Image (tube, rainbow, N blue to C red; front, side, top):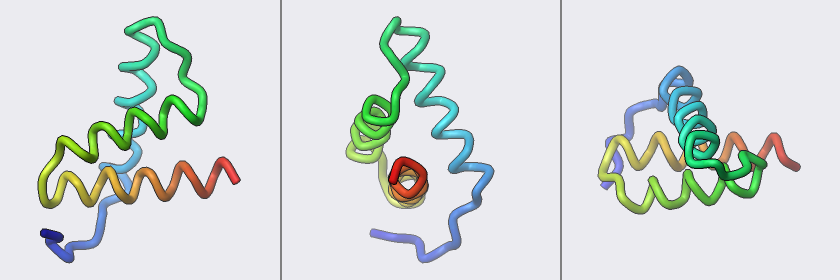
Length: 66
C-alpha cells in the first residue's frame, strides 16, 4: 500500500548511500548492478513508505545507468 506522499530525495540519497556502504563493508563490489540488486532486496523486505523510497531509488539509479 502506497502512502501517496512525495518521496524525499534526501531519503533516496540515504538508501543509495546505505546500499553502497553495505556492499563495500561486506567486501562486495559496488557497481550499478550490485547496487540495484541490493535496493531490490531491501524493497522486497520493506513496507509502505519505506518501500516507496526504495522504489524511487531504484528508478533514480536505473535512470543514471542508462
